[in-house]
Image (cartoon, rainbow, N blue to C red):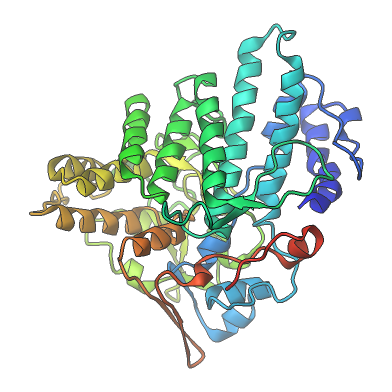
Length: 463
């Protein structure tokens, strides 16, 4: 990965020069030593404010079961071989293409974070504005943890406490040096580092979700991310603990009766459910929102929305020929990337699922129904009931599937639920051929881009 750092770091910081008035001298990349450090708190925050870092991988969205290409011609017309191969779970994913940022973009974030952390370490004890320094330090830790998490969930097996100490994780780059080669850690070591960074960041933030800058982290965002991570690790007691902590700090929900059903951008940038704004890489045409004409939302998903469920019209745009594409979601921007950030609806569902898993049906359905009453037309919602924990869990997982569509979470859910024995098999039909992805198949782990393996010598995933 280090070769990429030396190539992109100048490009990474150019927009910050223009828009954030950062100093030029620390932007000179040296190919055989560490990058010269930023100087002031303005410099550090300018790096964190850049829209070029913090982007999520898109491969999980492209391989999940939430969409279909509308025709074989549309499939052939996809912008890259990677998109076509991700759709049919081909073993040779990239076919020699330079990958579209799923690996490199998170490492850009990590590289930036490491430079900030190293620079701020030198300023501790001399900087008078310690409150701001602590916030920026926590932000860098948060970004690094988020990036490592998105890498490990994309390029490593689902967390399994029985194999995590031997399963291959990702290289843990923890300093700003360019030339140091880092081999892959284990999955356990990767998650340990993620959790350590997040727990260190937690006391450095205010509790309140920022009203204007929803891309700024907060205590609420840390707890929400920890809840998501522990859910993916199947540590449901800890996932529930952090879901509770999140909702104690911030628990707003949007009544969808107040949301436009015709606007292609139904939510604004500071909508009430948004905890942290974040998007996927804008590389693949098949993941675009609002203007996508190549794919349609999987009809099996569309059939899940009942009469009176407002999500059907709030989430999806229907073309005159019956093609359904996603609208711009909680990003609330004109961007075309999927929303991959943190929002309260996800946390309500995590709380409900975890309560059901410990057989607390009443609590589980209370959180589920509190969410769903805000998703149905007024007076058309009937509260969900269940006679057993298993029935409650199944209904909650169904609502999770409906609520969190196109947020880059479905692939993770398939991985962890199949680990739980759900036995979910994916199937595609394309030009008269059938493609199948069995539960727990090795193709649930994406290969590392070929150029990275060639240049760094790290071990490749087997598909």
